[in-house]
Length: 76
Image (tube, rainbow, N blue to C red; front, side, top):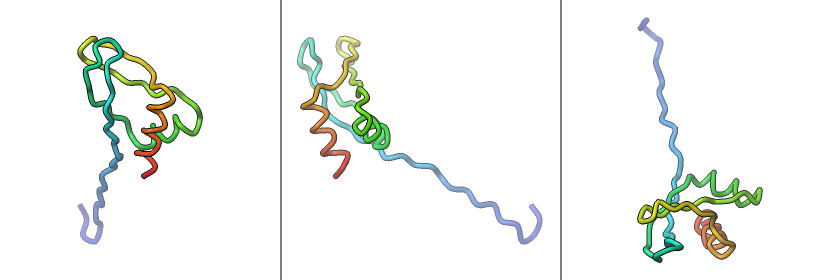
């Protein structure tokens, strides 16, 4: 690298929010995570927010009550 030229590196970091969910089949608690920007976008544009439970390999969309709780976490 020539003298006087500096290489500047910066890391891109995203804020992840982890939140508890319960499997709709057996009610076991699991932790999901999404980026804060993904959550805020889904809330603002009424897009579904998917959850996953490993116990039954089950995916589902959060209901309105879960979305409200997640909104409070994301906006805090």
